[in-house]
Image (tube, rainbow, N blue to C red; front, side):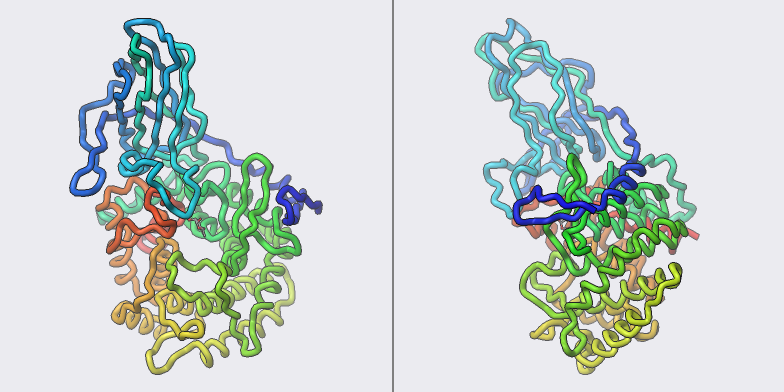
Length: 520
Ligand code: RAM
């Protein structure tokens, strides 16, 4: 163990053995060539940005351009990669620097909107836009960042009165550690599910880089909650066990001190734990390890990681109050969903029970005594029925205002403290009553679908997969989105949809459900 202090006032704890292991399982990146398929124009139509087709892209031919002209390419699908092109002068040698603006977008409106108008919560640095000067022509331009995009627009800001330019050979070297050709074909014949599965698999492949990234446009990092869902899909599709193992060691190897897990890891140049700690994400690391064990039976890795998961139970249990209910607070202590109105206390209580049960299973595998955790689970379950179950409404309530939300019911179903038939009734009652505090992320929608399957409500599960992910398909999704509300497609927890990620790993989980429960 060693300490680093690269963030003032924040002591990250590093387990070098774990980091070495993470390095050993570093993924090989597969590179492929991608070219623009079509030339398009992004125009405002009925108050929104839409794609107007111009014609097939002239991939290796000239785009003759002068000051203030622009060209937009449609690559025909979502890509993660590095773009390059050639540019030369025409008419006369370049007697002044060429000034270009290049934009990339997963969605047309990212091309259409101006960065200057962005006023969201997250850094505008995420907006995929470059201003470059080219002093000498001809030149081969390699853009500096890795982009996640379907659309690429080049705008000529200036040349000089003497020369124009031509642009040729627009190209992208796409990158991923996943190979879609290794994924088994489905045998089911439901066209909508096949389409949903295809887009899920692509979403996952685009997010599988050096680590399981949450989204290749934003945040491009390893979050525990996202990893949990990505690895579930991975076990049913790519089966890249080494990449999961790498991520598990990275997370356990870069803690916040005292064994406390960071909710996410910055894994690039000099890997470091983030300063964010989330009650549910720390516990869901246990689920990551549990699922990994179930799918690999790799007891050596479980042995390494056991102290880490044990510590998460110890830390989480310090949040129980005198009634054995997880204490609520008004800071960002627990994630659950991006619904601002959501009170997270009940979900947190249920997540404790859900993950502690998995910890007990892993303790058995390791031959460790878990009787204390078993007692905690019983106490937490009893307290939940006493203080959080509301007989009158037939729902679990959360927080001082006894809020009834979708998330609280879903997590209590998953915690398994009620019999399956009661869980099924609870789910149906929730769907029927439709409590006002709903779901805004595919992440929580995943757990909703899981709760339906766990309650034996397969038909409802399929119906809701189609309703939710089918609506994204109908919206033209090449990959599935970070946030999606079919009733309010422009919703963003960050104040602007421009900064939302439109290829987000936690949204690719229909493949897991389809392949695990439906494709038999
Ligand atoms: C956002 C990302 C990420 C998620 C966190 C909590 O920054 O969408 O996927 O895990 O929130």
